[in-house]
Length: 252
Ligand SMILES: NC(=O)c1ccc[n+]([C@@H]2O[C@H](COP(=O)([O-])OP(=O)(O)OC[C@H]3O[C@@H](n4cnc5c(N)ncnc54)[C@H](OP(=O)(O)O)[C@@H]3O)[C@@H](O)[C@H]2O)c1
Image 1: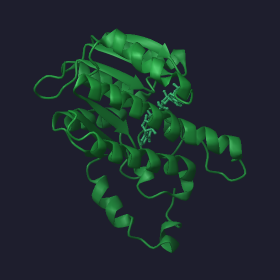
Image 2: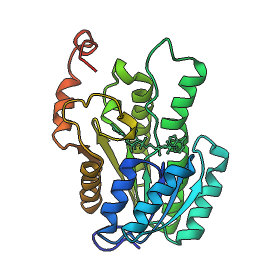
Image 3: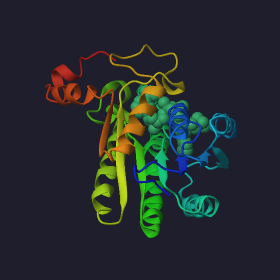
Image 4: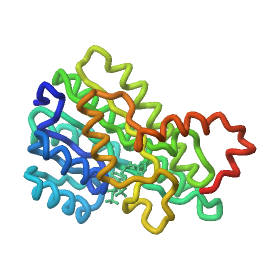
């Protein structure tokens, strides 16, 4: 069970092969995390996270599952519940940056990016939220993105999907009021991870460990929104007021 500080002993990670998720699990292991279920489409990246978790003293189980297989989500929730008993934390870390080049985008690519970044995670988030409400509590931590705060041409399909997921998480948080289930929305800027490898870091870039520290602190104080770095929120709030004629000329 979550202890009095709200720190989880058990967790499910959707997108369990994520480098950010891996850093979050290692950070949570220094608190009270003991058991985790890792799900994602690729066994190799899940096993890498399971090894990092085991090294940090967390027992990990791997379930290969692609969130765009929405018909399998209810079974995934049951499987995670069977393995963990009480689910203290669900971390949504699934995502694909993909492309925003018009010459590379066709209907299939756009739908796949929308599925990996919005439809799949959204379906799973609601299914796990209902399970957590039924058990009487828990926390959902959703890795949204600064890219969804005001969508840019550089990653507009990804950014639009993240905007959708962020909005869903905000509404879900309100819908869960009184159930004991909390929702923390995390909005990192550029993070130096596998997702951005080969790209020049944007201003205010961070590392997975920075996101992990911010997530742990956010869980501790039951934060509704966490920006990484924390100064990014006010900066983007101001930038959101730029007229679109200037916004579309910003680099990157
Ligand atoms: N890196 C950044 O700059 C940045 C900034 C803001 C927000 N974020 C968000 O932070 C989260 C973690 O990203 P990261 O930087 O750690 O990148 P990452 O290492 O590439 O992790 C993304 C994970 O999502 C998994 N995934 C992709 N499609 C999926 C699907 N359909 N079903 C289930 N899992 C799926 C990937 O699986 P595979 O292992 O098979 O690839 C991968 O393990 C993502 O939601 C991302 O959008 C990242």
